[in-house]
Amino acid sequence: MQAMVYTRYGTPEVLHLKQLEKPTPRENEVLVRVHAASINSADWRLLTANIFLVRLNSGLFRPRQSILGRDLAGRVEAVGSKVQRFQVGESVFGALTHFKEGAFAEYVCVPESLLEHKPINLGFEEAAAAPLAGITALQGLRDLGAVQKGQQVLIQGASGGVGTFAVQIAKSYGAEVTAVCSPRNVELARSLGADHVLDYTREDFTTTGKRYDVILAINGYQPIRSYQRALKEKGRYVMVGGDNRQIFEALLQGRRLSRKDGQQFGVLTLQPNAADLPFLREKLESRAIKSVVNKTYPLSQLQDAMRSFGEGHTQGKIVITVGQG
Image: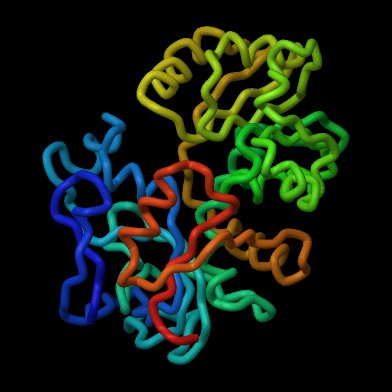
């Protein structure tokens, strides 16, 4: 099979096509013929390793896994002896952990627990854009944010992969949503259901005096004290992504600032939850939420796709097409 591999950290130029043997699924795994995959911040961080915690988990000097790609959609090619929910030929989608070889390849072995049947009304590209970003938004809002109907929720970074899902998921919980994005993404945020949209080049939400029950800061760049000013007395701040300074500030200062009966400051770490993919599938099939696909590239152009992602101005998701759907 063809796969896009890397053996050292660096820029997209370290990625290259290589012919590999088709993998064989273990007893609890499904071999998927990949039709589409999508790029996430996790892929960029695993490629560049510019976050210290990434190197601790994935190899200090070189990556332990050689194939990136956390999201996928495709068809079942073979199943392990203990797999019960899937049969050969069925269409599936899912998200891999960073401890597994990724989906930027023609075939990938996926634990049965990380897969779900593809939404019947979605193509492979739309389906591949949803799993990791959707689960990140869901766990950030539901688990750490504890979002409730009628609450005031602010989504910073509302036009990216996680942000586009976060706006829609917060609305599905009945929240009043304020989206923060660049000028060119204002209409996109409105089309996703945001009640209010702030152009961050013209307005700083941390200085307006308005306070929120939940702030989901996706790659947020403000100091944690600024977020504190924008939170209600019992508000919750959830950090999703960020650079080394932001991560350690949120981990150290956030713990000190958090109060049992007051404001809470947390950093999202994804946790396995077997109900999350079925939740996304139901919402996608009912069109309560949708994937926003910015652009598609073939596997052979993954370098270009990664460069585009690294510029940081993508609306929604960049999808990699691997096989014919």
